[in-house]
Amino acid sequence: MTDRFNPGEADFKQALRDFVNAIPRVFVFLWEVAPVMFSIIFVLMLISSFFPAAILWTSKLVLDGVVEAVNTHKDWTLLLTPIIVLFVIWLIQALTGALSNIMQMIMRQKAQIVAQGQLMEKAGKLDLAFFESPRFYDQLYHARRRMWGVYQSCFGTVTFIQQFITLGTVLGLLSVLHPVAVLVLVGTSLPHIWREARFTKKRYKLDADLVRADRLADYLARLVTFRDTAKEVRVFSLKDYFTNRYYYYRNLYLTAYRKLVIDESYVSILLNLLGLIGVSGIYIYAVMETVAGRITIGDLPMVVGAAQQSRTQLTGLISSGGRFYENSLFVTRFFQFLDLDPKSIEGSLSPPTRAVPLAFPSPITKGIEFKDVSFKYPQTDTMVLDNVSFTVPVGGKIAIVGVNGAGKTTMIKLLARLYDPTHGSVSLDGIDLREYDLPQLRTNISVVFQDFYQYDISASDNVGLGKVDEIDNRPLVEIAAQRGGVHETIDALPSKYDTILGRTFEQGVDLSGGEWQNMAIARAFMSDSQFLILDEPTAALDALKEHQLYERFSDLTEDKTVVFISHRFSTVRMADLIIVINGGRVTEIGSHQELLANGDLYSRMFNTQASRYVS
Image (cartoon, rainbow, N blue to C red; front, top):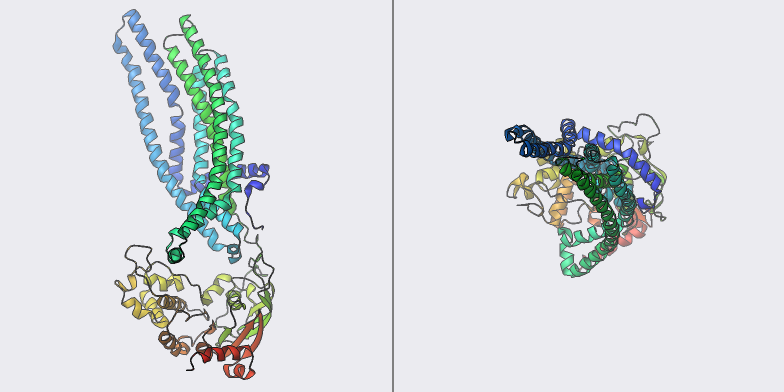
């Protein structure tokens, strides 16, 4: 998997194959979204394809009847029948068109909802390694932008069929004048096929070539408009810089797009002029035939209308074919994302070697062991961990310490099996983590990350996400909140546990950094996992809150094996075992007192921090 996603670089023949393969998938997709509605829309669109010819023919009958009534003094009321028929056709056309439009708008919304849901399903299943790749974000961006094409491609097909039927019936009326008139009309319209093929390919390539610039512009717009960045944008006066960069990347696309549109317009003007010459010739010939008496007065407006409509329908058919082809090419990117092979990226999780993955042990009997573990992140060459070995005993409280960038958080990601080791193994009860059922493993390992997310949803749901199957179990949520030290904060909110947090939505209440961290800890305690991992769990807590949490720490984690990272040695010294990591290697293992006595990195770090509190 290369760093850049650029479908425009691919063989265009492959794009055509993807296009052909996408068509049946599009129909299946919309059938699954709403089969009854899809069928009704399809039938209505096919019925409506016969209306133009019917209107032209009935109008001819009315006009011929008028001429005959004038010449022979027949009763004009005889013309009421074709007039009524014409009125009924107009009425049915209006009703079917209105019904079809209503159903199409609803269908389009339903298709959008399902397509977005499928993107979410797919992205949620992919390994974390994908989210380290810019190419993946290009693919996701393309898929999200082009998912509307699923609907457009399907009904583009129906529209194409509809226009084809309409064209056939109208050309049949035109043949009343002379078969050559049909050939003239078709001949002067055929060059539009070349235009559509040429510029569809150019638009497809333009979109592919500039996806990264388009995504950068979107990112820059978010930097100026999102709350998370609002403070720094103002403090460092970044608005103009980000806005100017936004215009730069957007103008890259605009410049290329403008050139493409102008080039296509020149060609279209010339081809439309050719088509008008053909229609004008047919018009002149029709007048000559009418004067000569070879066609009737009623035939004249019919064939002239048929010629004009045929030209419109023919160029529309070609344009619809081009748009259908273009939409189908673009929608292949939606399906390409859904079809992403979970193993197509470096660093993806390895599947179990056995047919049926092992159930997670309950309870754990031996603990977790790192054995000769080395690791580098996907698409990088630097080993973040190098030949790391240690054991986490069952029920133990293990602290991992080290300088920033030493590899501490990476070890946690391996423990939670967000990644697999590049070399070596991480085993549970003597068996490689890769052999266990992954959903069960995730259920039994609860993690509070240093960069935990602040969910702008209710306080109750914020805690309940730790065990989503019990998210509506308010008593369990309150117990977890009490254990995490956030119950009093929630209880003081305007609507208590039903209060929306954050400032994204109306009446939302924001929390302090420490309160948000307590919320994340409570979320971890919501889970009944056997293994608890805490990455800087008290970094945002004040000294009093930290002390209160760790006073209860042993009771709160009595039934759990705990691994935590902390730079606060008042916290670290409570651990049963301390692992010191430096430069991706384990350099010291022991208790607080043992490591102090060694006089190495741990001792120096502890004494440096302790000296800050000595007057």
